[in-house]
Image 1 (cartoon, one colour):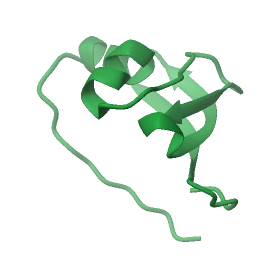
Image 2 (cartoon, one colour):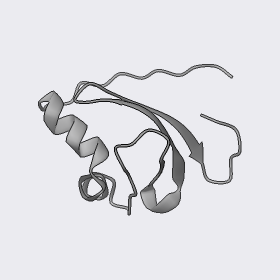
Image 3 (spheres, one colour):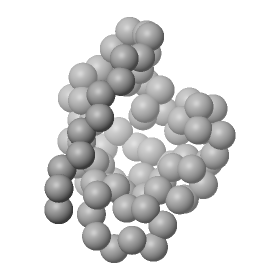
Image 4 (cartoon, helix red, strand yellow):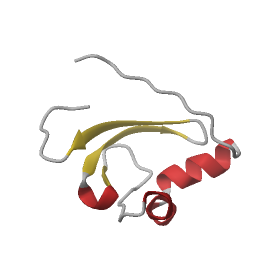
Length: 78
């Protein structure tokens, strides 16, 4: 599988952006759908009302979130 990387500039501090990506209430505000998220390696997450699901691999506070994503009924990792 090819690796895809996409970079965006987002206005905000690293702390604000990190919080927006791990807080399920904040995620629901910017995605418009229900979200499940825990800042804990090995836990599952769900975004966009369950359209995207995955596993949290690692967290580096205010710096990086590593995840495996699954889209819909897709079985292969993304």
